[in-house]
Image (cartoon, rainbow, N blue to C red; front, side):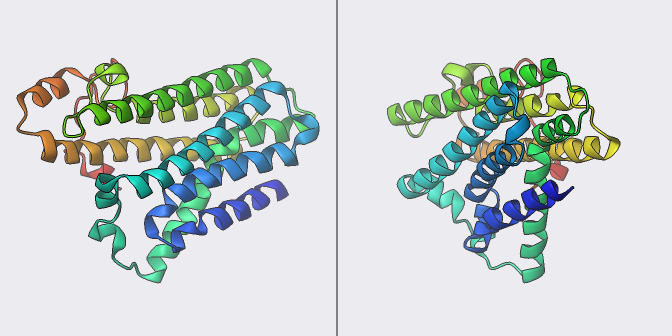
Amino acid sequence: MTYLWILLAISFAVSALGWIYFIYFFSIGYGLAISALTVATAIIFRDVLTLPAAILCGVLFVYGIRLALYLFLREKRSASYKHILYQPENTTKKPVFVMISIWIACALLYVGQISPATFYLYNLENGLTVNDVWAWIGAVVATAGVIIEMVADAQKSAAKKVNARRFVDTGLYRIVRCPNYFGEVLMWTGSFLICFGACCTAGQWIIAALGYIGIVYVMFSGARRLELRQNETYGKDPEFQAYIKKTPLIIPFLPIYSVAKYTWLKG
């Protein structure tokens, strides 16, 4: 289990960016932690690194670096994002025990998220018969998720350049209101699928499942925050009201149109 302690130490070290500014625990620190953990996984298990596992690690690495860079540039260039980022709830100094608790939770979550590929390679290294079919399926699904997220971000940026004050309902946003969040859910679903062919122990299943459930919760929590902000900004717009009544919030074709009332999603 030494490899898990190494990954946890890396996760703690990188996510410690949150001590500079609280929100970085979940944003830039998150992206860089995922990238660092996937690189570490590939290095630790380099002697048994299969092609699908290498592809998945590469996809997660690109995702993490891109996310960190995207958020960094967005913070520097977007006045509206700065306004959201530096709201009082984020800038108010948090008690030390709260900061430590969040730091621990984030570090554990990030390790849990990347753990399926890690367990797959660890079990392979220890002579267990793993199923590469699930690894390939996971790699393909995760890649599709990252592509969807990248396209969604690009489409939103293009739409905002045309009309910064209008909600986005073009491109992927015609199908689902949060296609970027859907892309991330799909990516982590692909990562989690590897467990089905990795000969995981009960403990490994628990760690991987907690990581997957945790990030899906975070995505729905983020969708809820976005929904509340959009309701405040565009709530009186008849076009917006028509749009949200027919367009699912986060999962395409799944008729979930609002999660605003679910206070347990408050992150």
